[in-house]
Image (tube, rainbow, N blue to C red; front, side, top):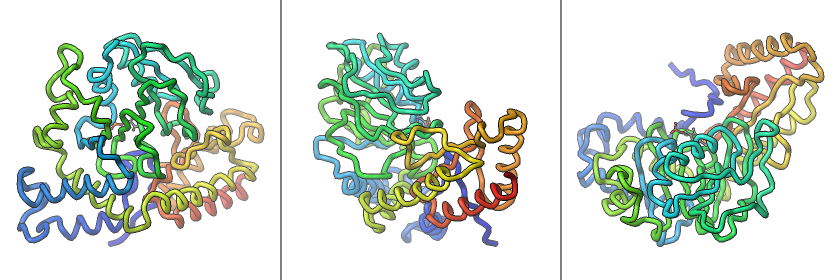
Length: 370
Ligand SMILES: *Cc1c(COP(=O)(O)O)cnc(C)c1O
């Protein structure tokens, strides 16, 4: 039976169908090993090839310079909230830009280890924009400046990186990873939990400049939370998230085969424009983000409160939309539990036809409910 839905989940999220099918074909017998990747030693030749190719393909995609290490680690993106300060907060001072809940969580975790300062925030307008970060009050002795580059919950994206005044830039790219080309040399550390755009949950990819990997970490840093131990052991200090690495590797190959990140950016811009253009002319629905800060990946929208002024009616209409959309095969359009409304996440693997079909459905719903 074949009944896949259009899955607009913010994460874990849609993966390329051909990747899933390939994994299915190889489930019982990977490349004539007679076993599944899940069953094989992480020290085997077969797995060595998988992890080496995954790294090489990722390096090709992002044009990662030789002085950066690529680490495939466990603990998801959230583990990095602690791992970053434990490893690079030498002066016990770091400056954070607060553009949403993920940045705030990282900032709060950082406070366990040292003096963290919020140097900018968009909390005043419920995180619906990216603040001007061209001339912030970055502290002279700050160890790094931290951003969440794409805000999954609020649907904003840094379209210009902050001026860190020479300090190391650390970026959480979980929900925009590999959605467009980036200049890796601008970052000290960039990392991404993979369940948004590249693979199964539980794994994080860390791309880190070599000089930041040292023995000089905060006291009591556990072995498993030292970048150095993982870098020295090529992500094989202990059993890595092997199946996750295998699926990510397939997604990297899919991205390379379909034209790399320049081509992917064009497709993503085209997809996002279909949805934003509809929202901009819709009477019933309205996007919640300032235009200049819009994300290509996460698109939050609501029933326009200026049109449906009664709050109860508005909430009811939104609930009706989400439920009717689900019946029509559009899953996970409910907004984050903390913000309400709707959100369509349109990651790399969401086909353009999915976005077109969603917009058609929204227009029909609008016609019936205005
Ligand atoms: C989902 C998400 C996280 C948390 O990822 P986990 O793997 O669940 O820890 C962190 N940051 C951003 C931007 C996210 O979208």
